[in-house]
Image (cartoon, rainbow, N blue to C red; front, side, top):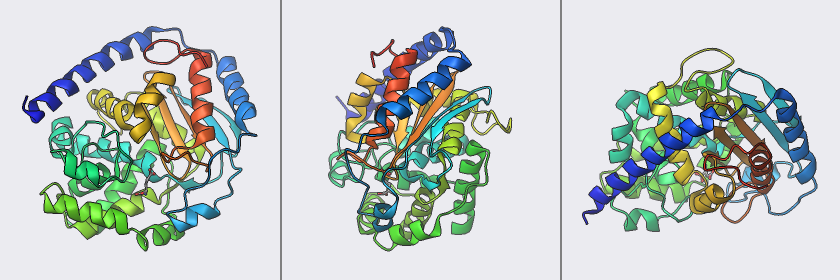
Length: 342
Ligand code: GLU
């Protein structure tokens, strides 16, 4: 079968399934404030002594972030927030930024442009894979891997690098309802060692799958990953998606309601890179991870769960944050495919 037709078909069926699951999840009874408070505290207490994994070190400065930090937050679509632990510490958002910029591109050019010019298929390969670029005809594969995220930045409609960056930053601020700032030290550390991502940008450009100057896209992408966010702000970013694109704190519409299911589908299929299948299998929620240690998961129509802790597993996903979110999803029975046991 023509691979393009196959991709379109499997994408369409994934969307149909997600639409049905989203409706059934939205119809289930909402957990009470007491339940939300209880599970956040429980998840923090249960995993705070877990010390498996290690900080990312391929971006030198990430190795210096205190490894024991651990925060857990639930933010609801009504703007209520429940938290435990180090939720005010600002860490670099890294790849958790990716779906939000993909949302900006959807807003500007429509979801079909994201599917056609980036792709929406999981790679089954690590986040920085160059093999995936050679293997798949889409090249960039999906907006969650580095290739697709750099392509997404290159698609933001802008006449200059400054305008591109301002739009990316403002969009993240709108999702968070907070004046997020660039962590300049992180940016310098990451950009001065960005040889792998530079190779990705140049490969994509070579294949006609990058839509601006490659070095400009690389710089803006690296800045996007170096934005500082705390766990409370990250939870509000997710709650904006849970609230159909309206920030529950500021009331501002950030993403058209009709694009939210597509963005959540991308997160569900690709948000954990080569562990996306295992994540869906055990937690059953759309989510996005980052090598800074942050993860945000969305229970569509209800709330978001964010967690942060710097120690990562081999796929680049925070071990405590994954466990905390999975525990909460299991306890509340909010997995999209049915209640997962904790
Ligand atoms: N800025 C990181 C990179 O490009 C993001 C990776 C991640 O968070 O998974 O390698």
